[in-house]
Image (tube, rainbow, N blue to C red; front, side):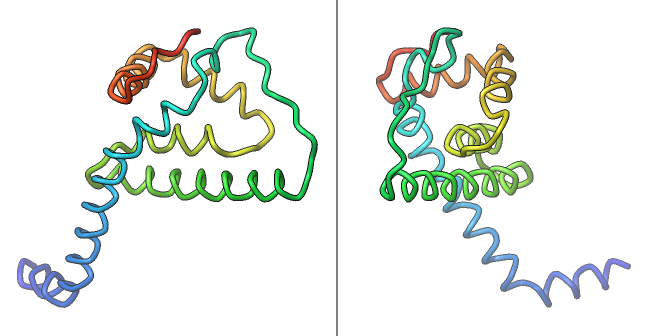
Length: 136
């Protein structure tokens, strides 16, 4: 049994090294960019009286929404991967959700932010970016 495991590991050694390298790069990237991205979110975003800005639907705004949604999807996928590899998986998933546009997004965000450990972690990361804490 042990010989089979060792044989499988040696057979997929290149793949395992590549997964390790990708995991390390994603880990470092999330450590660097997470505080910055959290700093871009308005301080009152999670307050009850927050009203998002309504803009005209132009081609540029559609393109911007598509790019934000794709970036959010990439962050969610990376976050799920980081749940089993080194990295800030839950924070990356939350950032991905914040960037995406879908029905029920606001209720989901408020449910996440009402969890005190999550709220404290997000504010700690905002502090690292030199931004004021979120208000509820």
